[in-house]
Length: 263
Ligand code: NAD
Image (cartoon, rainbow, N blue to C red):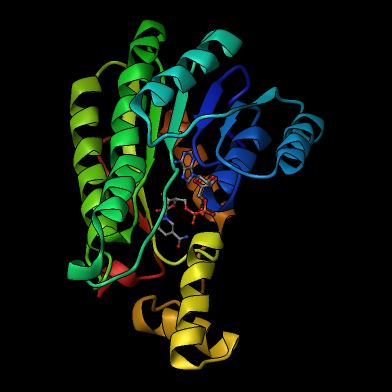
């Protein structure tokens, strides 16, 4: 699907890895300039910027920011605006996971997951919306999860943060309705990224499984398609949400979960 995003500028948090990287590539493929953000090896991040410029002819910069910090969230938007003039698309994607029973979860992990997976989206949206209102076009795409719609054991902070993010998505949609701005949540099921890799390796260790068996168990418990969704598929949906065809989709939570939440 070709959607022309030439002249648009997007900030994608957590775009140095996994789903965020897939979204940044799909937006760039459709002509959008990109503010990359996220942690990682400096050489790899530099190579990524060069690849986006060379492969898709777009402008791409990387801004260092820890989105757990509200001031750094606001500074990240300010830097994107200073560089490109407008930020038309905001993808709140950065996220972390921790798996443990509720009473063993730990305050630090709870606070970090709430800060990165939920509060960052609030701070970044608050900073980006005034500019979108000025131009009369804006797209906020929040990367929630099936865990924003249903729960699983041992993911207290993640499930709470993702349910909160879906609530924030609805409020943002209502406050921007009729202004050329939409806000939606994408709710992936299992996507094979470093975040899920850690959970596969954990199960291999704990349950004495080989890799194939651990992957099969993970999928067969939850995802009826029996296949991982891909970062490219999430990216394609994000691109569609940025198109004119999606101008009346707002406040929605869209699963990409192989049937997980249909059960
Ligand atoms: P990932 O670990 O591959 O990537 C996470 C990205 O977030 C990285 O770029 C990392 O540098 C960045 N990040 C983490 N903490 C940060 C911080 N404090 N400040 C700035 N950047 C930070 O993970 P992923 O699987 O690609 O996950 C991306 C998003 O998708 C997350 O919000 C996650 O909850 C969501 N998600 C993932 C899956 C899945 O199966 N992988 C499923 C549903 C939802």
